[in-house]
Image (cartoon, rainbow, N blue to C red; front, side, top):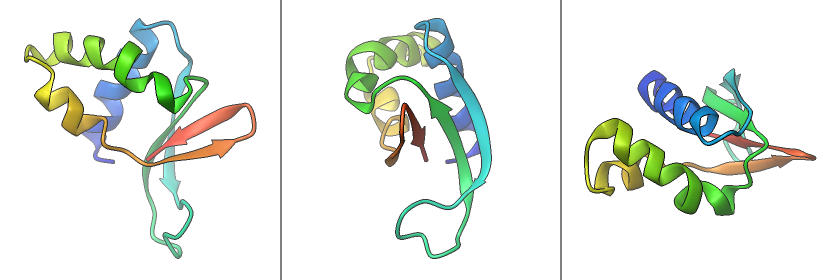
Length: 85
């Protein structure tokens, strides 16, 4: 994820009441050592559209199309938390 994606999604998660912290240099499944910026959160990925998208759309001032594009992220399970990248 880009720095902009990380900051916008993190802000939306926090506004919605979810925990979120940055995870720099994350290498996810199938990335073979390539790293990217990521977020660790307690928000289950199935809630991104219903709970996070409205905050992102409001923040971006659009009808949700840009929020949809920002939320096209991959997700791994970290036990009780999730990493979005």
